Every structure is written in structure tokens, then in C-alpha cells.
Length: 188
Image (cartoon, rainbow, N blue to C red; front, top):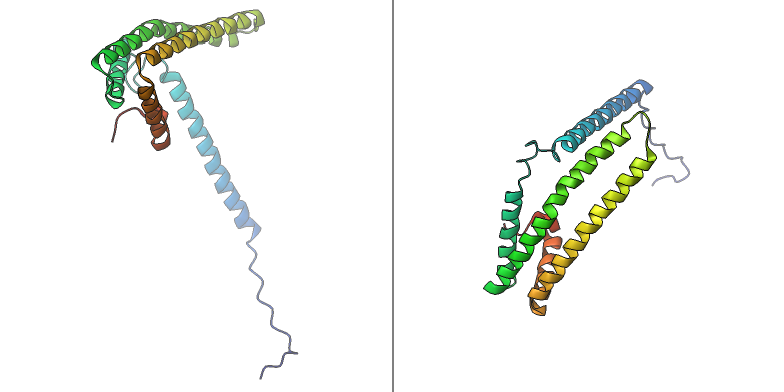
């Protein structure tokens, strides 16, 4: 039998890690964190400086003809997905072509405004009035683009039947759920 009055032996205390080893671990972790932060900053800087300019760092330079071709291809694919007639497809292609004709010049204006903002923010003396003027111009540009896009959406909705619009909505919801909206219309 076991005598229950005997004290139980206490488990051994865990060996304390020497302070020197703890300090070394923190130094390694801190070094890795700083290296990761600096690497991330450099990558971010490289992308921001090259991606939006005419460079092939992240791909070919922006080409309006290529943009029109991709938009036309997307409309044709979409028309197949929602069972649009040939007449509807031609109308949709015309709407998108006109939209791009109106919006592509705005891209150049937006890039020019970006350069102006960079100049304004790097001057020795900050000109608040010029910054405010630039802000108002940018809002006007965005508002104009938004109005033109809304007009094109309404025109496209007029071309499609209610059933086709529901089919389009279901297709967009499926894309968002499966891959995200910006992943494109292609399958695979």
C-alpha cells in the first residue's frame, strides 16, 4: 500500500535560459526584422517608381492599342458568357470602345497631375494654394471619369435584357468568390 501521508516529490524546475542566450535570440530576431523591413521598403520603392512609368520592370509599357484590344476581347468573352446576340455584342463593343476613347486621355492628365504633386511637395516652401488647386483639379478629373463610366454602364445595361444582367451579376459574384474580381474573365 501507499502511504498517503508522505509528501510527493516536486517536479524539477525548468532550467532557466541564461540571459546571454536570450539576448542573442533577440538580436537575431531584431536583425531579421530590420532586414525584412528594409527589403520590403526597397521593393515598394522599386515598384512605385517603375510600375507606373513607361518601363518594363513589371511588364510592357502601357499601350493604348493593347488596352483597347484587351477590352474588346473581354467584351466578346462576356457576350458569350451571357448569351448576347451579335447585335448586342456589336453595341457593347462600341460602348466600350467609346468609353476607352474618352478615358485613355485622362490617364495622361492624371500622370501629369501626379508629377505636379511631387514637385509641389518637394519645394523648399510649401504652396498650400497650389496644392489646393491641384486637389480640386484631381477631383474634377475623377468626377468626369466617374460620370463617363456611369454613362457607359447605363448604356450597356440598356443593351442587355434583364435576364442577361442577372446572368452577368451571377458571373461576377462567382468570380469574386472564386478568384477575386481582378483576376480576369479567363478560365483555368
